[in-house]
Image (tube, rainbow, N blue to C red; front, side, top):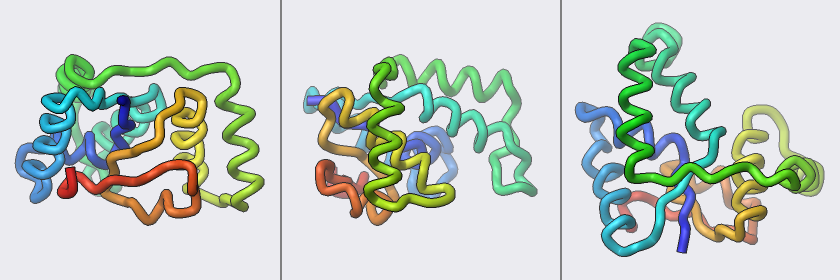
Amino acid sequence: MAILCDTNVLLRAAQRHHPQYSVAAGAIERLIRANREPVIFLQNLVEFWNVATRPEKNNGLGWSVKGTNEELERLTESIGVLPEPARTGQLWRALVVDHEVRGVQVHDARLVAGMKAHGIREILTCNGGDFIRYAEISALSPDAV
């Protein structure tokens, strides 16, 4: 059974000095060992790249393009990247209208739309509160896996 990994978990699992590194990386490893099939979408890769390459002074990691690409290669060796079905856009639009989603939360709605398109019911995230409005999915914290 597939479980989507939110970008915040991927970023913590990629930063060996982050206080939550062990929790995030351990959760992904436990999912793999339990045959839970951790997956991501292109959107997660884009969000990861944005944060990783953005300067530290702008709340990023300040990584090089080469280093960011190498880290994404490492991550995608163990985490599958699912395609975005054509109906994801339609599902996303229905979600943002039905739940009156505004601002930056539209990105989470897009993840949920992809989850719905693929029949995925769980997301591994450090921000479970961002997904409470979506009764059709469950948010799991890395320390609960």
